[in-house]
Length: 394
Ligand code: RFL
Image (cartoon, rainbow, N blue to C red; front, side):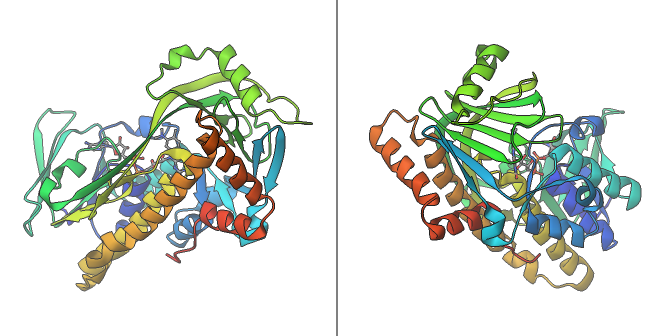
C-alpha cells in the first residue's frame, strides 16, 4: 500500500493535519490505536485561544464550534480571602473559546472521514516506523481484524501520537535534545456533574494548595486540586474533594460551589518536555508527541493546533508545488511558540503553587505578584497577552 503521508494518532493535531491535506487533495492515512467511540469521548482540554479557532475556521473546521462554544472574556483569582477579576478581553481585544476537546475531536473525525473521504484506521496495534532517513519511509502496524502486519510506504510520516506514543522514540538519541521539567506537584483532575459556579475560570491560590474551576458545559464543570505527585485518587472521597474545593475556592461574599457527582478523578503529575528539533529525516512530530505542557496554563491543545496548521501548510506546499521552505523551517517556527508557552506555564505554576509551598519567602513573592496583577495595568496587560497567546495569523 502507498500513500504520500501517514499520520500516526487521531488527536487534535493528527486530525487537523489530515483535514488540511484532504482539502488540498493530498492523500494520507491516519492510524489510531483506540476506537472512534473512545476518542470521541475522551475528556481533556476545553480552552481554545481565539487565533486557534480562527485558524480552524479558515480551514472550514469550526462550524459546530462557532455555534456551540462559549466565549470567555475574564478570569478570577481568589487569594487571601478576596476575589479579583481580570478582564483580559478588555485588555487585549481577544477572548477564549470554551469547547470540550471530545467535541472538537468528534467534529474533526466526521469532517475528515465522512465529508472529505479521508482514510482512517482505528484499533491498530504495534505501529512501527521504518527508513525515516531515506526518501521512501514506511509505517507498519498490526491490523485489528486479521492480526496481519500491514505496511504503508509513504513520503512523510507525521508523529501526532501524543505523550505516550511511539513516534518520539524513533528519533535517534544522538540527533535530538529532550528538555524536561518536573514541577514535583500533582493535580487531581476532576469532572463534576454540576453546573459551573462562576461565569468564568476561577483560580484559588490557597495555603492548602491550588484549586481551579473551569466551566465545560452548562451541566459539567472541571475542577483541579493540587495534591502530592503520585497520590492515589482513591484517597479523595467525594466528601473530601468538595470540602477542599469549598475551602480553597472560598472567598468573602461568595456563595458556596454547586456540588455534584464526580465523573472523572485522575492524578496528573505536572511535568513538561520539549523535543528539539521536532523532525528527523522524513518524520515530523506535532502536538504532545513533540512537547508537553502540564495543563497549568491550558496551552497543550492550542500548541497542537499551531503545529498542525504549520505542518499541514508545509506538506501541501511541498507535495503540490515542490516548495520545501515550510518543511525546512517547521521545527524552528513551532518551537518559538512552544518555548514562549512553556515559560508562561512555569511563571503561572509559581503563582498557583507558591502560597502552599511551605516556603514563606516563595509565599510572600507569590502574593506580591498577585497584588501587582490587580494594581499595575502594565502587569495585567502582560498577563492577558500571554494567557491568550499572540496571534500568529495562520
Ligand atoms: P492527543 O490528543 O494525545 O492524541 C494522540 C492520539 O494518538 C493516539 N496514539 C496512537 N496512535 C497510533 N499508534 C500509537 N502508538 C499511538 N499512541 C497514541 C492516541 O490514542 C490519541 O488519539 O495528542 P495531540 O493531538 O497532540 O493533542 C494534544 C492535546 O490532546 C493536549 O495537549 C491537551 O489535552 C492538553 N490539555 C489542555 N490543553 C489545552 O489547550 N487547554 C486545556 O484546557 C487543557 N486541559 C489537557 C487539559 C490535558 C489533560 N490531560 C489529561 C493530559 C486537561 C487535562 C486533564
